[in-house]
Length: 257
Image (tube, rainbow, N blue to C red):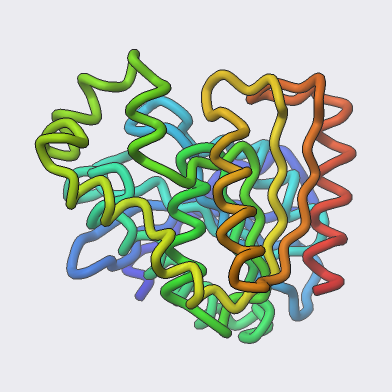
């Protein structure tokens, strides 16, 4: 699945970084791969970024942060970014980039095949949900941090994103309701086999905590394992010290699943 793999400068001597070109439904898509320098077998970590295009782009420092906890991390840029083919369509066909990235980790020689975790931040939350649905029992866990779960709610809450969403998705929720419903897979949550952790700041104005409440409710209705870490004083972006602490906690949570 990997078409090209090139070394990328790493600020950490303990983690090797590579830019990767891989195939997703026939498209050449780019991503960032981080491998612990110490030889061994590791859990896989699929990092699903937020935003769209240059907004919310994958940051090497963030990827190294997770890889340093003992994971092989792969973060797709999504189609159409950093020289990749195709165009993002906000949890539409570009979900295939996440699915293919998960399969890439399954084929990585240093990854334990049954120990691949899914992590989604912001818009990556809905990508993570879709990937957990697609992969079923093959996903070891799912973490959604400040994650989107309902695309109609996103349209309602984020007036600043409406023009982009209408262009990328094809219209408003009233004009093309099927497109928004397709991107809001609550009716398929029963297919999620992985334990779920939801992390959210209650003062988040980018992705309201209502998204996590809705996802949590759906999981509980189906008696799916779900844990929530909600923080009353935090927004979409957590203070650096707390961010580092929670990264350590959530990676330990993953390893214990």
